[in-house]
Length: 235
Ligand SMILES: Nc1ncnc2c1ncn2[C@@H]1O[C@H](COP(=O)(O)OP(=O)(O)OP(=O)(O)O)[C@@H](O)[C@H]1O
Image (tube, rainbow, N blue to C red):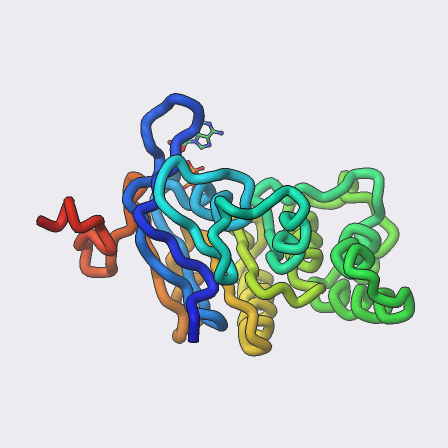
């Protein structure tokens, strides 16, 4: 099956700085489950930003759903973004909307009927343990509760790709396990899942997952060797 994501010799820099991601060449299979690990500052969030089209690469080629993202026009961008669910490290909930309306957003944007929206949001609220806060505004929730809302919003429309940045960083172990179950269920329905995490304990929760480790902007395999490096560097 064709890769859902393909990177070829991709580099990323912010402004005129040094490259923070270098020589990334890898592909993600549709329906795969991937953990992205690495020390703080290694480049995990930056790689996710390339995937959700918040950053353009300084060099190399990124193909997403078979399309070179460099050829994407502004007009085609929203349709692409709708296929990607994102759990941001800083949640990015909309402050003036209730948590119910935050979670409902992707379905409403997708034109889903209101009855179905209500039912789906009710199920999600129950799953993340927040039914009793359905009408609350995000600012009145704890960090862990906001994180659960962010996750519910990212998964509710069953995106083709789910990108989650430290999605369990603010919750206890029992809740982290429950949230991982949600990701595994979504993955079982065909969503490709990428979870960036510091938390080594999470990796053991999904035996079928692949691990990708970033060290100083480069992908490294489990044995510590340079992975997918460019031909020039291997020579
Ligand atoms: N907007 C930005 N402008 C300039 N440099 C940035 C920006 N965002 C990140 N960086 C730099 O890019 C490098 C990778 O950062 P990134 O946030 O991707 O790391 P990370 O692995 O996600 O870290 P953490 O686990 O702490 O979230 C770091 O050196 C960081 O300082």
